[in-house]
Length: 140
Image 1 (cartoon, helix red, strand yellow):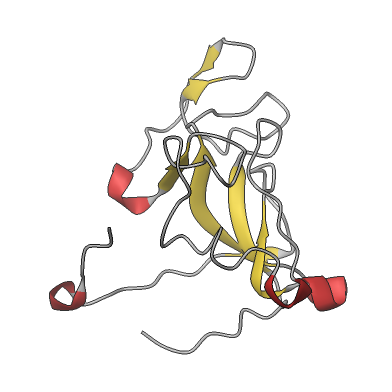
Image 2 (cartoon, one colour):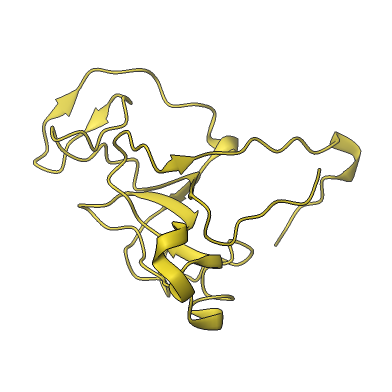
């Protein structure tokens, strides 16, 4: 728990991915075993338990959760708020991130959502958040 500055300081990588596709051989596979966009497969580390990440089934924000909008993911609900940029995951950019870089100006901020390749970057970070188990509620 805490207060975080996610208003355009660095890319905040999140564990959201399009269809668990691993991308291509140009660094987009992020090291996970899986299917490439051409149908072949690659070796890599196993995916973590599915409770730790979101899988999007479409690159359309209106159908990205099994044909429906993803409620509670802050996608549809906050898309382009305060002029923050919004780019949904797609085959070429299958991973999700938030916040944006400080040099992006007004388009970066707490509602910024974008889709990087999944390769290493010097301008990115990630944050682990621990929630006491007795405070977890199910979202429907």
